[in-house]
Structure formats: structure tokens, C-alpha cells
Length: 222
Image 1 (cartoon, rainbow, N blue to C red):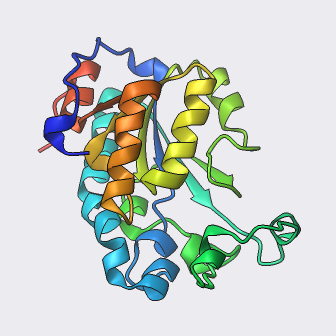
Image 2: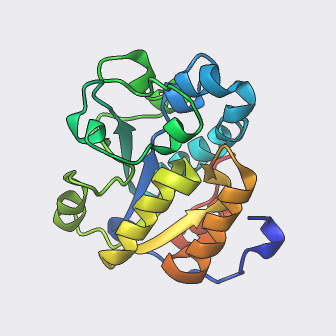
């Protein structure tokens, strides 16, 4: 979503104790040149995720400065997933004729990229998920309620699949959703823009790292 298309909304002052930064799937298979996605589709397929890394790290540092909790998700698939095998309609990858061994359990590809690992702290949480949404049959909602979280700041990849699914599930559970545009990424610009437009229309507010920092009462780290 081009910056000039983002609605300029003055965010209210946010209580950091009610805010969580959720960083979705910044993993080797999605973001690394040696990961499964880059090998299957070429390095151009990870250009947007790679470009977003500095902004995601900046958002994490803003969260630290404000005392906001940080949680990461990791997508993990089972090679022998019986539920997937029962499907009768070809998957989006099958329809493209692509065999993608993505984020298989126990592989390097499931691990978070080094740039994210470098800014993690022991108190951070990591949610393992087996489907697109960070909420689908994971403990995320229970943990958010237990910690008194009301506002989710969403970062990560992929905008038109895992990010979109997570945003919609958060909205359906009555969380406030903020999406700094520079910290989410896709493999397709049009799909990325469409989700941000839909989010800003219905499910949350598309904003920026600087505006979230301002709402939290902190400066963006130099």
C-alpha cells in the first residue's frame, strides 16, 4: 500500500502494558537466500521480506524502549501432515506445480533469521503454529488475555497469507490491531497492497513505526 494511500490517523496515547508486538514468521525458509522460498522461486521472491528486516528490527527496539512485550511466531510443518493429505482440491502450491518443502519440523528453515535472533531476549515468547494464523489452535489468545493485552502491533511476513489471517483473527477476538506498513512484507506487491487496504478499511489501522513510537511515548532509536 503506497504511503500516500495510508489514512493519516492520530493514534491515541497507548499504555505499553496493554500492547504486544507480534512478529510473524521471520524465518529462514521465508526470508533467507538459502531458504526454501528463494530456492523454489528465486531470490526475487524474498526481496520484500529482506528489505523489511531493518524496519522490523527498529520496531522491536521501539517496543523495548517502551517496555512493550514482544512475541514471535514460527511456522512449523510436518512432512507427513495427514490433514493436508486429505484435501481433495489442490493447494495453492499444487496449482502452480511447485513442490515446496517449507518449514519442515527440525530443519534450519524453521528457525528465525539471524537478524531477529540478535535482538531477542529471554523474556520474549515464541509461538509455534502449524497453519497461517498465529491464533489457530495455538496458546496465543490465552497468553494475550492472561497478560492484559488489548493492542497488537503486527510485523512480519507474508502479508497476504499469515499476516492477513492473523489480523483477521485478532479483529474477530476484539483486539485493536496496528500494522506499521514498513514492517510487513509479501512476495507480491499487489497482494500486499490489497491486504493493507482491506486492513485499514475494516480490521485495524495501517500506520508507521514512527507513529507507533509516538503513541507509546518513546523516540525511534537512532
